Image (tube, rainbow, N blue to C red; front, side, top):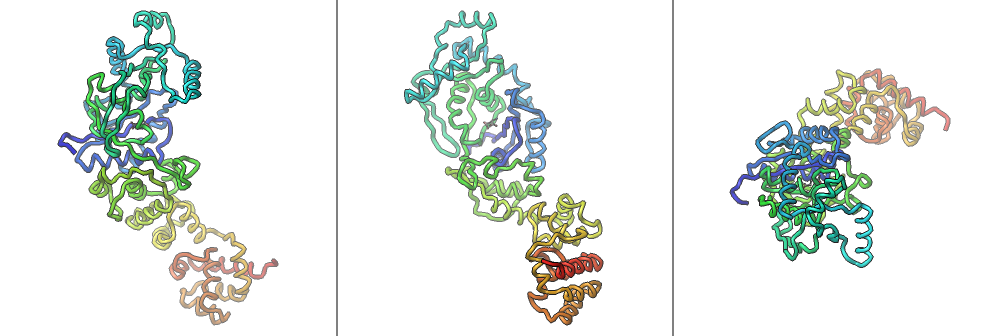
Length: 472
Ligand code: GLU
C-alpha cells in the first residue's frame, strides 16, 4: 500500500434493509481502513428516487451503529467532502453533465425503452452482446438541444471512445483489461434528469478522495465505464477491489430464499454484534487466528491478499459457532440483558441472574432462551408423546414421591424417589428431568430445581403423575 492516506467507503443504496452481503462489504471496508489507520466514509446513494426510502437510510445507519461500524465521514460526521447523500449533490453532477455535453463527451439520446429493448433482442438473436447501437450518437448537438428545448424526453449518454483498452489493477483480482469497443455508450443522466448510479458513484468516490473501494463482484463490469468517466473529466480514480459473491448453502447466490437474513432479522433472532462481525470477517477472507476479536483485533489481521477469489459460502452453523463464542465472552450483566430481551416477559425478575447462568450453555438464539424460560417457568408444560410414555413407564407413584419431596434439596429428593420407586441412573433422572422441563437434555438438575422452587417443582411432578395415569 502507498503512503497516501487510506480512505475507504461504504455506499449503500437505501432501497432495502442491510443484508449479509452488503454488510460484509461494509465490514471489509471498515477493516481495510482501520488496518491502515485510515478512514471509512459512508455515502447514501439515493439518486434513484423511486427505489430510495428514508426509512432505509435510517435503518442502515442504525444497523451499522449497532454493530459498532463507525464512519469517520458521512451523515452526522460532516467534513469538507460532504454532503453525503447523493440527492443533495445534484448541482455537482449537473455542472459536469454540461461540461461533458459541451465537450462532446456526452450526447442526448431519444431512444424509447421499447426501441432499446427491441434493439437488444435483435443483437441477442444475432449472437452479439447487447449494447447501445449508437442510434443517437450522430445527431448534431444543436438539433438535439432544440428537441430537448421542445420538451422531448432524453437521457444523456457518455460517448465511449473507440479502440481503447481500459486497464485497472483490481485489489483482489489483479490486472483487469476491457476493450472500450465492447462497452457501448451508457446512460449517465436518466430521462428524469437524475444522475445514474454509474456516474455519481464514480464522481463521488473521486470528489470525496476515496482511495480504496471494496465492493461486490457484480460491479466489476461497471468499473471500466467508471474509469472512462473519471479519466475524461480529469478526476483521479480510486482503487477498486471486487469481492467474490456470497453463495447460499445450496450453492446459489445468497438470497432470501436460501438463508440471507437482514441485519434486523438477525438482531431480532438474538445474534450479537461480535458474532456477526467475527463470522463475516472470515467469509471470503482467510484468517489464521480463530479467536473471537473486536474490530481493532480483526483489523490487525485483515489483508487484501487474504481475500479469496472464489465465491464464499454462507454457513449458518459457522455463524452459530461465533455466536456461541460471543455469548461466552459476555459479562454476566450483559448476558442477563440479552436473555431478558428474549424472554423478559417469562422470567421472574429475581430469577433472571440464576436463569442466565444456568441455561447459557444451552442457548444460541432468542428462541432457545424462550424455550428454556418456558420450560423453567411456565405454569404447565405441553409434554411430548415421548415424555408421556416415559412418565407412564416410571409410574405415578414415582412422581408422587417426587412431589412429596419437592421442598427438599436435590440430593435428598432423588434419594427419596429412588427409595420409593427402586429407579436409578437414567431410569431415575430422565423422568425427573422430563417432568421438570419437558426436555430430555438441558442444564444441571440440582441448580435448576433450586431455581424453580418447591411449588413449581411440585406442580410439575403432579402434572407428570397425572399423565402417568391418563388413558392412552
Ligand atoms: N450503491 C451501490 C450499491 O449499493 C454501491 C456500489 C459500490 O459499492 O460501488 O450496490
